[in-house]
Length: 417
Image 1 (spheres, rainbow, N blue to C red):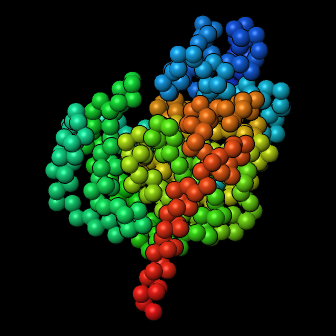
Image 2 (image 1 turned 90 degrees about the vertical axis):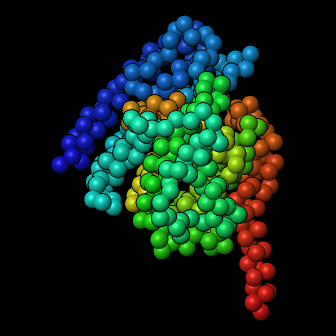
Image 3 (image 1 turned 135 degrees about the vertical axis):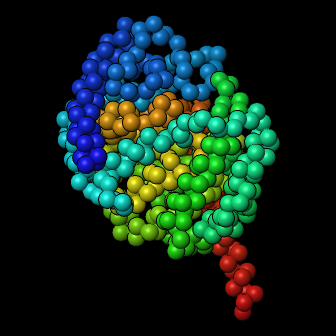
C-alpha cells in the first residue's frame, strides 16, 4: 500500500520535475546571456538541479562549487547538475522524456528482493545518501584517535566474524575496516578538515554493513583470483588524484553493453563488492574520500544503459555503495553526456540528500574533458583507455591487484606440485 502511494506521488513529481526543468532552462539561459554574453559560459549555484533552482543574476564569480576555489575563479569550467539543462538546449528532449517515462514505469513495475518495487527501493536508497543524521545520545569526538577509542568501547561484545569480508586480497585487517567506518563518520569544516567524529554513527553504519554482507555474500566467492574475466568486461579503473582522493573511473562508451548483459548477474555483483572493498581499505579513500568519474556516451540509450545490469543486482549495488559502505563520495563527475541525462537528474535530484546533490557535477558537452579533469584531478593521475582523455597510468590499482593475486596463485600451485 505504501509502495503504491509512493509511486503515485513519484508520477506527479516526474511531471513537476520536467516542467520545472524547462522553466529553469529558460530563466538560466536568459540570465547567462545577460551576464556572460554567451549561453554556454555560466556559473551555477551549488544547489544543483533541484527543480526550483536557478542561477542568480548576481553570480559573476563561482561560489560554493564543492571544491576550494582558485584565485582566478572557474567561471568557464565549474558546473553542477543544472549545467546539463543548458549544454544541450538546441536538442529536442521529446524522445528523451519518453525514454525516461518508460524507464520509470519499468522501475515501478519491477519487484525486487523484499517485494518492493525497484522504484521505491531506489528512492529509499537515495534518501540514505547523506549517511543518516546525528541522533540524540550520539557521542562526538574531536580527534580520530579519541573516536577510535570510543568506537572500540561501543563494539565490545559484538559477535562478528566478518567471514564474508575479503581481507586477504587487500592485505587488510579488521582494524582497518573499523578505521574506515570511523573516518566515514567525520564531519568536515569549510576547509575540508575533519572537525569532529561520530563513533555512534559509525557503529550504526557498521551494523548495516554486517547485515548486508551476511545476507548477500554468505555463499559468494569474493577471491580476487576469480575476478579477472568480469573485470575485463567492465574495464573499470582506480587511481588517486592530486589531492590524495581515490578516483573510480567508469567508461561506458568502451563497454560492449550487449555482451555485459550475458555476464551472470552474480559475477557482476561479486566484482562490484570486491572492488568496493578495494576502495574501503584504501588509505587515500578513507582520509580524503572518493571521486567518481563516469563517461556516459552521447549516443548511449537510456533503456540500454538501465538494463545492462539486472534490476535486482542494480538495487543491491545502489544500497551497498550509497547506504552501506563507509565511503565518503567527495565528488561525482559525469561527462560525454546523452540528452536524456538532464531529465533523469531532474527526476532523481529531489530524493537525494542535500550533500550528495552538491557533490554531483555534470560536465557540459561543450567543455573539453582533458582540460577540465587536468584542473580537477591532475593529468598525471589519468589511466589509459578512458574516453576523450590522454592518460599515462598503464596499470591502475585494479590491474596491479589482479596481477599480484595471479602471481600468488602461480606460487601456490608450484608449492602444491
